[in-house]
Image (tube, rainbow, N blue to C red; front, side, top):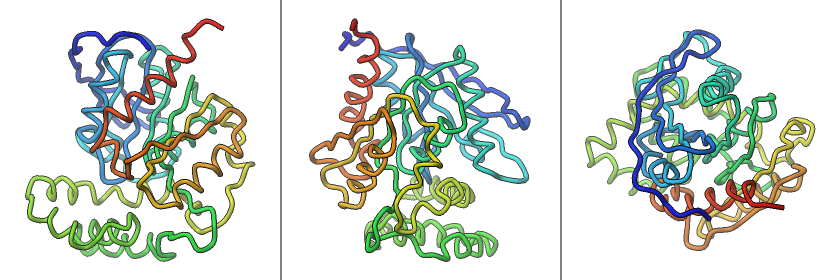
Length: 283
């Protein structure tokens, strides 16, 4: 592992995606490029600490997914547009990069590689596939319910529903979040993008094995990470992913849960650094 350098400066910029949407990002550091793909109800502020740690070793692109933060959006959404956003960011940094994605952002990163985006290495934290009957998955009417709540302007209720019914967060935890105005305002401001993450996940949360055909294009070295304190379903999902990808491995990180990217970025960063720098070691 290389020795960490002084904290690099961040530079804000924008790229224009294939459909004309502007995607805002911060670039920092130097060396091989790494693009960070955020999860549901998150923007680049949630991955800022992780970006700062990684930027001591790599060129890091920490971006706002479309519809979030300073990025633009389009009238119609499809996961393919977000894949194009990632491709535009990678083109900006020279045409190839590694990706790190967490939760639904991990699935979006997988989709980008499967679609042929030029990715060197792929690191994933707890892609929320539901691969076994009996594992807790989202309600089957999730998309309809979230759409209805947003159409009624009930963004706070949409966030609460998603956190409790999809992420499994205790209601008391959501209650305390509501007592922190800045945090709750950020979350409700991101609520309109919940249908985007639901679309990214597709039907992969319905308690069935992963379709190897869907992911056959993911032929790059891949590391799947899970937290030792996370529900067992995340472990099963990680093993299912590594089982169908030709160059994948899985590591469990003791003491971490699904919020580790925000709560324990140093532990996540060390895994990403080790994984990417493996490719730089002499054979």
